[in-house]
Length: 253
Ligand code: NAD
Image 1 (cartoon, rainbow, N blue to C red):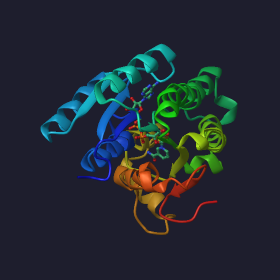
Image 2 (spheres, rainbow, N blue to C red):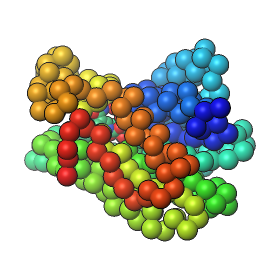
Image 3 (spheres, rainbow, N blue to C red):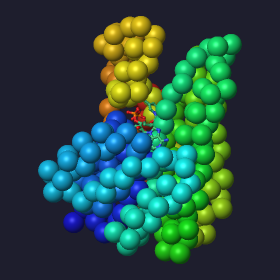
Image 4 (cartoon, protein in one colour):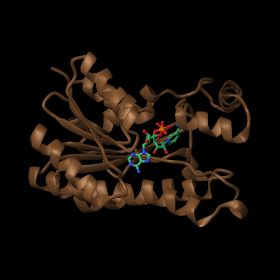
């Protein structure tokens, strides 16, 4: 028996990177896991990985910005697993640019995926969770919420997710639902690889440069974030709500 045996988890953007790491950790601890993603190739690859490990996985192609697709996917997960106990709002994109170069599409894409996506998925999940009188919602924010050059759109969305987290914690607490956020620092994933490519340096150099300012002197891995998510997702964390934990190898505000 694992900590999450009998629990079902729904993870947005769960086919790779941090989302995949969270899916793996919670599945290893016994959860039935549903992941949605727009990247169908990564979805199939993730599905094959979990099946190889004899772990129950539902991999559904769905876009978090499309309410109908999210509702259909979550219903499929609910039909298959019998509940939606944990929602992880992880799907994310970056469209970095200095303010003077950032166009409306860069702004809207980032707001839509992070903020509308989390809004739609949380609203859909609370329909199940309120009835169950149980739920755990975990939003993936970022240290960029504290401000980061070239990320006016992303920093705004990630700070917005923190206000969203605290508000849902207040509204949903009486239904046995906690809502918390994990704010990662530098984590080695395809997203940070894309950042290296955009600024024209090797990934190794980006990692080395980032590690120089990280007190624990290493970069983060998806497992580091999954560990914090597992804490919030635990039934025994029922008195922890509306919190943001920075998982960045050192103190952040
Ligand atoms: P990633 O690009 O590897 O994974 C993001 C996943 O989200 C991808 O599989 C992508 O296809 C999916 N996705 C994108 N748009 C979607 C949509 N509209 N609907 C459904 N799925 C969609 O990146 P990652 O580094 O694993 O990032 C995961 C989360 O962690 C993101 O919210 C990101 O902002 C956040 N984060 C990452 C870092 C880091 O250093 N990597 C730091 C702080 C926060």
